[in-house]
Image: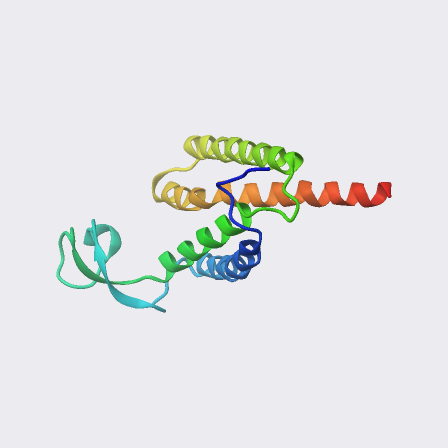
Length: 164
């Protein structure tokens, strides 16, 4: 079966090795309200405003310039997305039409669930709390897809072994 947009199967192991620590670090960062100063460095900023990001240095806009910020949250989010994409979009050992159909249905299912949750958030969450929801929303499609795809795959493998 030709699946040109999927990564080779070996990327799944690397993905789990990145995704699990990034998930644990993300949960820890959530529990301390993202208040860290672990990795502070100078980075290039396309857009920045001290009112929002509290960048160090002189007050005002920091557009298209270098600023000094803590990059811990960005690094954990970056690693989570890279690991999640490797886990979610790597080929299975036996990639057949059932797997392709399961992958598609899981992706559709995760998009639907994600947007239902987002609609609920639009109705019931306000102000800066909504900004937090939007940050989490970046990750929910990937999380729901990985959970559903692997759960159905596991359930199917259990049914296949029970029939033998």
